[in-house]
Picture 1 (cartoon, rainbow, N blue to C red):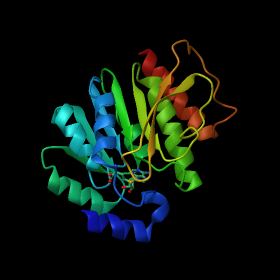
Picture 2: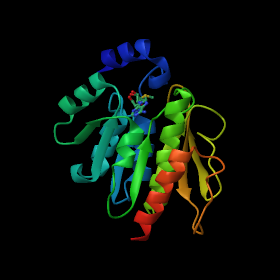
Picture 3: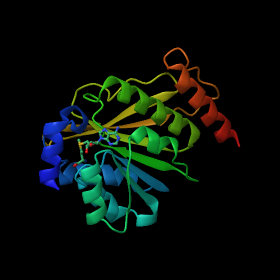
Length: 207
Ligand SMILES: C[S@@+](CC[C@H](N)C(=O)[O-])C[C@H]1O[C@@H](n2cnc3c(N)ncnc32)[C@H](O)[C@@H]1O
């Protein structure tokens, strides 16, 4: 799997976004934060370092794993035959993923290096998902000093901790919807298609 990771890194460095897989320590911290949610959706599973830690704290039925790169997804399916592994872009997986109860979205997506169009689509899908799924949160790490990405009002980032036992050191953040968000106007910062999608999410959430 490591070999496949490095090949993918050479072919598409912006999508992989890291020189080496996540450390076991970082993976454990992410899994610890996710374990009390009703469901866990892992985005950008890569070599499965985080998948491994998640599979130790949540049951297979609760875990959905998503990876964009075909070869990495195929390796994950082989390595974790009991898990649901989907080869897909994260935004498409999010748009089609609905569960009753809270969802921890655990993401290794490299927002700092993703192509702008994919980054934009993915963020809009994440915000729509959080808005439609009460009690859900995004657990994201980043190698930078700032927020993983900026969010409109109605959402808040919470810095959890730095993990120095990772290369490079990573900071874990949690994004959630603020409690009082009856009708957030995201339209000024969103693409029209995303506004439509958020509207659908709001209607679904009210049902
Ligand atoms: C930092 S790497 C993997 C980290 C992973 N925790 C590991 O230890 O291998 C990020 C992963 O996100 C995947 N990725 C990037 N963009 C994606 C997208 N739009 N949808 C799904 N996966 C994506 C990449 O293919 C890559 O495997």
